[in-house]
Image (cartoon, rainbow, N blue to C red; front, side, top):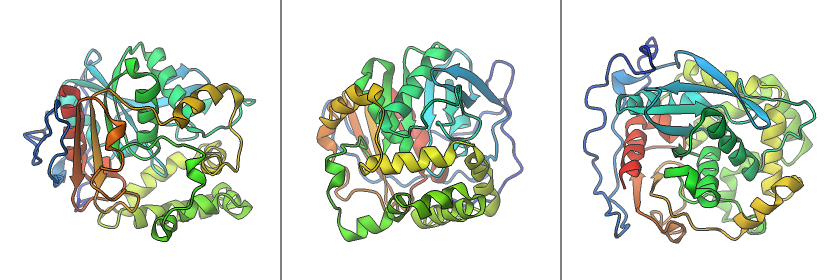
Length: 357
């Protein structure tokens, strides 16, 4: 269990973006038995190392870039010419999920990009007339636009929750843009028809907020600052039962929920998943391709968090056939939903290993 003990350390960055103080030995040999790229066999369960004194509270500065429909706010760490890694957060989280991961990867020579997804933090729509759409292909195309804006041909894509789904979509539809993939929870591409089928009751209970957002009560709650604060905090507490975070950790992320488009994007995302809200015609070709559950052929490490209520039983077997390239699977003992912030060294290790598969 990660202990949130130290909160006064800011991430130091030298000229050119390199971390000033390398982190001593954070990414040594993993404790798991790695799969052979040729066989793709799953590794043994891996216990995530504790971040301890390496924990940080903030990125040194944020940047913005015009990218497609958005002006995207993002954090960056590491050398400007390093091999790029894009880290993608989920809901209800933000870029701070990677505040400990980024310096670990930067110390290994990577250029680390951590963007706010649409509707979060400093990311803004360029036009007030753009529909506030939360469907999966729209968010994936935001990241493609970000890569274009930053001049990145390819990058390692690594994420959890919405971020894992976004990375999966890009790896499936635009594999030439994805050098390698780290996906918490495995294959998260949404098929709307399949999503209409009920899940086991215990699983449905974990999705309570999805159904809440389908109601006007839920929409109003998301638009109310106090109710939104308490709702998202409850999600943190319930989906990461072993994570010993403090109030300050949550509040740093909750600031990203003040984005004027936050409620609209979140509500549309969850209503669209249940076919209760329409997507946009411009994304229909992509959604049709995704409905066929396309396989992913790029080198991939999938991570399952043992204490995450959304982790599918079977140690990755339920989605193993969707990954047809070099592959490894790891289970993180005692870890909940917010994997990169709860187990930053294990997450960073997965990125390094995926890039080498």
